[in-house]
Amino acid sequence: MPAIDLARLRAQAARLADFFFLPEEFIKHLREVLEFYVNYTLRTVENVAPGSNLKTYRTPPAVLTQIQNELRLKAEEHPHFALELADKLWDEGALETRLLASYLLGRIPPQEERLLPRVSAWTQQIRDPEVRAALLTTSLSRMRKETPERFLSLAREYLHPERPRLWSNGIQALLPLVADSDFENLPAIFDLAEPIIEEAPSALQGDLADLIVALYRASPNETIFMMKQILSTTENPLTAVTMRRIAPDFPPPLRNELRDFLRPQLTPRPKPEDSADDFIDESAAVKADAPPSPARQIRRKKLDNTRLIYLHGSQSSSQSGKARQFAEKFPGMITPDFSDDFDEYMAQLKKILGRKKNWTLIGSSYGGLIATVYAAQKAEQVRKLVLLAPALLKAPFGKYLDDLPPIEVPATVIHGTADDVVPLDEAREYAEKLFPHLRYIVVNDGHRLQEAFNELNWEEILE
Image (cartoon, rainbow, N blue to C red; front, side, top):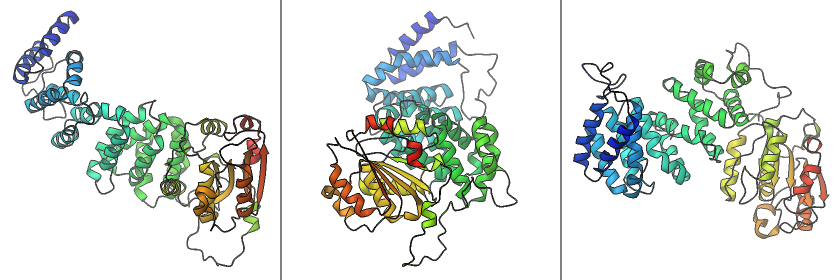
């Protein structure tokens, strides 16, 4: 292999790009360039890539990178020709040509209807790990960045519970999205990842380790919470076994947090302090006319940040000012993203809370309405409600509120006198009707409670 002269390589790649619209000529001249840079010291008689069934030119990565750079703009400006050339490159059947085909797919607009069929078909044809990774990452790069919701729909298809043979593809596709610091909808990723991690198929140990490590780097607190919840509630005996096998790949802080949960259990697994009453006993008989237990309501426990959850308002998110402030003040607290649709919001919340008890729901505005209705339905799971300017309004939410029974969960409402979104008097009337154990804090502030947030003693309010 001759030493790489960058000026010469650029000229060769630029000349090659001139044949972009002539696939047959492009392939012919591409072979010449790849042969020119063959590393004969590594080339074998069979000339097959290790761990693969693909022939390879043993060309240095810098050569392909330069060719890709020359093709990028043309592929983006002429997606039809990019697809035609990608097909020819794929059919050529070499490691380098298929990597180049995968790159061209990644420059095609995600709206192109022929993109996903090629990704799906080619991933089923290939066993080479490098090409497979390129198809699931590089080929989907524009879809991941420009249409993240469409990309998540694809990931859901890969990770469908009834399609375990595609789970590895789904995990591989998710990794770049998890690592993207600009991506904000991490709760959706956790929702997709949790059932796969709990299933813990031994054949996917390497993929699961990569996914858990990526999630931890993106959001340590949420990952620790998810892993503890899985390990403490799963009925799948293989979950802990697989997690013990891959634990050496975890970052040390995560490994330390999970040590007790991963240790083989000869006796019942130890639970966190003061958590003996941590789960709902669904087998216990509940008398319809049994009075609420005052002892349970007034029992004080050490505050567990992992049982604090913030429910944001309509058209808000986990990146709102209050959500970030709560997350900073109470590390380990959960601040998910929710849908604005009432039924979807409620379904998402039920999935997150599961069967665990002792939750403190902090609901802001529309999130306060959700928290109120949830506490009416699942009072046995809720330790306390903290409602910030809750949307307890006759219009348009009377249909959710008017038939609610008294809610025995202790509730603290914080409301501003200058709130021009949720009238204080109307919300207070509802609150006093619904909550027998109510503390109402009125502050001199607006709907967002920006000034009051820093003045309130949140430790005391949440305790």
